[in-house]
Image 1 (cartoon, rainbow, N blue to C red):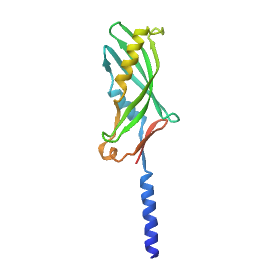
Image 2 (tube, rainbow, N blue to C red):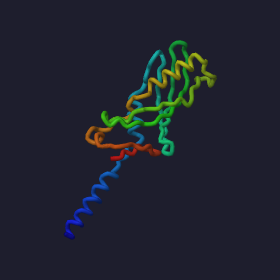
Image 3 (tube, rainbow, N blue to C red):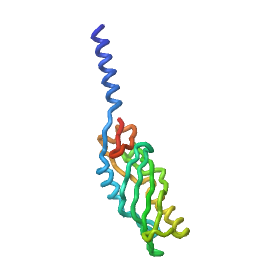
Length: 157
């Protein structure tokens, strides 16, 4: 009887430890995966040169880069933030809930309202729902949630 109790306690501890298991994906791997998705182009607007900044407290990622418009010929910088979304079926960390933070021209002037509206819609639709990182299938199918850290994603099993 005593052996059964000890074995039961050991099994409970082992199961508890397994559910608390986590793995971190370094920011450098995420950055490489994001950069591979660029440049992105839609409606003559091109987005390029992405740089990310992770926010542990907000659980958001800031992504900044350059934009260029062919008609009219303009260029500048943009910054968005987004919540990473775990898509368990695909094993992907996806960009979701995109918010535009900054939109400027290369001269530092204000973007004309017509271009701002086009850029705002284009930037958001170009980025919303794309995969920021694909987790290998062997691991990805077992992940329950993700957390943004200062320099990594923490995968929770």
